[in-house]
Length: 296
Ligand SMILES: [Zn+2]
Image 1 (cartoon, rainbow, N blue to C red):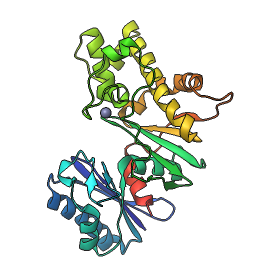
Image 2 (image 1 turned 180 degrees about the vertical axis):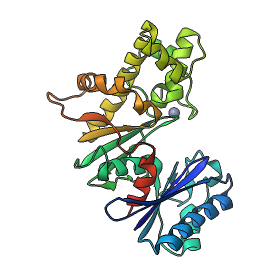
Image 3 (image 1 turned 90 degrees about the vertical axis):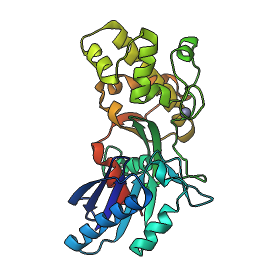
Image 4 (image 1 turned 180 degrees about the horizontal axis):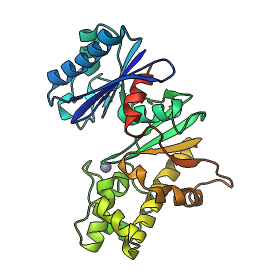
């Protein structure tokens, strides 16, 4: 039995699966917004599963951000109370065992690669398009972390070949750079580009409602969105050449993406043939917690 834990900013979810991925138990607690409280929450989940079901063979944790390859301290986490802390070391001490700790987008990619939409494909690129934009790479059902623990992090590379209009109707990214993929293809980014252009105050759901009503400007916004996503993914394809690309996060629920992106993406690929497909995830919101359990 394996324990997976998805550490989010507001909730911490735990899952217990058997060796073929069957869910045996699941629990959810509120994330304490401080370091000691977060650690105690994780310990309580592990102890609860093990007192109910017996000892587990592994504990994996998916979290925002990454563990620095140099200092072993947490970096880039939007749960900021974790940054700069020896999170893995402290958990291993408290639980008296090895802990697998991995970025949550990498967990998503792994989950879809093992028994989700990427099953049977050697190289899977998992994409998160939700509140933020991230990505992870799974190769032969293992996470590729990279030398600096940032492999697959495509949210803060620039949208290629931006037009003047695309430079005009976008906000600066929180990372201080301009033109990041996240500012175009995250949910808030998509809405923000639309609002700047049309002087509205919509969220992504309101734009999609206009799209359902066949409003011209919303159809144009969705077409632009698909094109932005395809241009960003073309960089990944031209370097990694994955077998399949699996989308997750709130924006991945838009079916219009899948009806169009494979044709658009092919235009930007440096190859006569292109067999890689962009598909929707299978595990939905459970991708992170399932992927954490599959870590080893
Ligand atoms: Zn950025």
